[in-house]
Image (cartoon, rainbow, N blue to C red; front, side, top):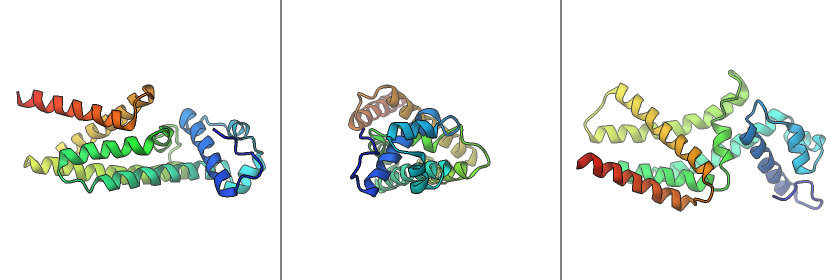
Length: 201
């Protein structure tokens, strides 16, 4: 990764470089443990420059979350155009994999358990969590409706299971970075197919 302190770099490009570095720090260490000094050192810039660009550590974190959340929500929203509950579930996973390709920390800063509650930082992340959860909720409702199931409790449990599947899959991918987004999509399809066959056999 190029250092943001390189002279002659346009401001917009430098801001993106700073967000890349800060996202790594916040994603790897969590909001509560991330060090602005480490971000400054890795970027090769001064703290005053960070303050000039973003205002504060919290605003730098918010900018990282906004960028990550906007990208991820847009990708998942596009996947909802796929017809059929099974196809939509796989398309959603594929969208997440492609949005997070090389940027696994984007997931971590949105679902950061070190965020203090209540706090503006938690509220910012929660905004994107809610948007993603709303689309997941709609997908779960579609699956259950197809089976004639309209139980709120079943919906709640299946939504919890879906989020667990997604988050666990992303965590597994982080430990196997050699897998591409297409590899991960194909792997999920194989597993879905195996589960479907075992259920009907």
